[in-house]
Length: 267
Image 1 (cartoon, rainbow, N blue to C red):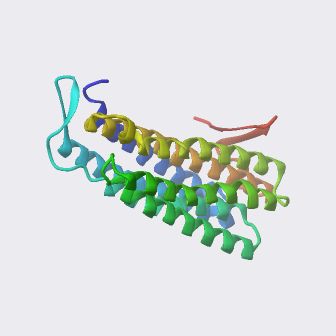
Image 2: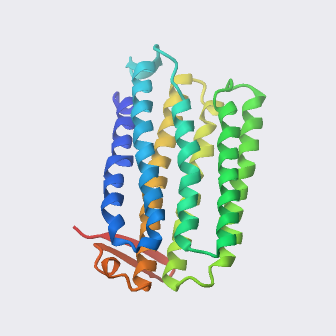
């Protein structure tokens, strides 16, 4: 493991997670039809909030850890995991909301999904935090992990069950993009509960903390900007279907076919 990995991971991840995607979403927003812009605004807000909290996470990491004798040593202030959980408490409900809003489902269905997914996502994060800060050897850590997985499973049920059954009015291209987006979400979100358990299986506390933060950071970078790009792709696709001229000329290509979806941004 490189001596600079622990600290500079957060600096680089915050850079990529924050200002570049945020700038892109700000610039592309005007190419989306007005009725679909709220979803892109929420996407921009998600990456902007993440940028701020990654700066705070990086500062806390620098104060808490140093690299000595080939390993990380926790010899400073306690690492503040609260910054990451506050970030998730704000961005996860917004991330799910942008997906529901961009689909433009019936008003009653949209309201129901927003409430249920919002409550489930907040419950998932609040239930996870006590276990996050609990002693790694305590039974409570496992108990809180199991409790947090219940709303996590419910969110997946809604996304793959209820939401999937309500997409008959969407175009084939949007349905394919949504399938791709949901599998991206499952793949990236599955990293979080695994990283959460790192202290359970690694005896060295500093090493376990490094691996846990690496896992969280990689999952954040894959989940938030990539999820946002796919939401933008859906918004552009729906804008094009509506005949919105700026979306037709937008420098982003949405391709879907043979069960595969891809988003390409021209230089």
